[in-house]
Length: 123
Length: 106
Image (cartoon, rainbow over all chains, first blue to last red; front, side, top):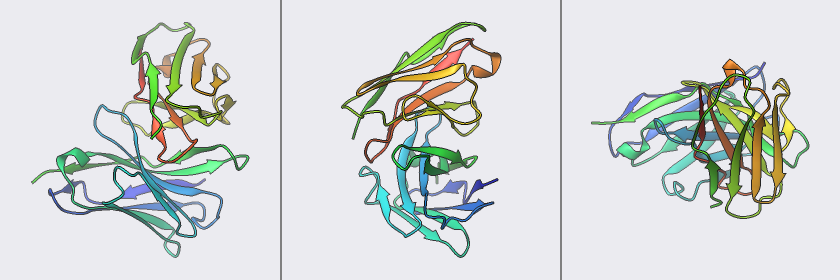
């Protein structure tokens, strides 16, 4: 079955850029019927949608992070990535990659998640 | 952004109880509402999508209802494995937003 796995550094210094990768296994990222998404969750808090990418490369970002976020896809590696610049302590969180799918092409939801990776921002 | 407000933020219940969690959207979102369950240290798992459609493999004791701005998640008879945090999420428009969560405790 399809699985998602995040990878990247667990510790980032303030002002640096975070780079995370999500590897999709058991299926093709280019199937064309899914959005590939990043979501984060600070410890003990709620979930924040960061943004998403379609297989074509089309992206949508959360306006609150838009100036700092880039999401890209590498279909040859079956991966998609998150870059978040100018990191601060407020960006410390568990970062999840997720797949957004739809059964009927109208109602979309996150049907598959990675296990998440903790990113701490500290000098 | 569409604000999503859940209540209560925490809830104590017992095995066998019937439990209802509510979610209110800051504007009408039709039926573009999903519910997720998150256990400690794990990724969220979808329970209900499109306000009332049960995700494949999810026990039938979970149900969802509502449309417009007011939604509910009901667990008809709590089981030990249901003690977790529950989130609602709107998929009406980007940026997608989540409720703050309801922690269901014994």
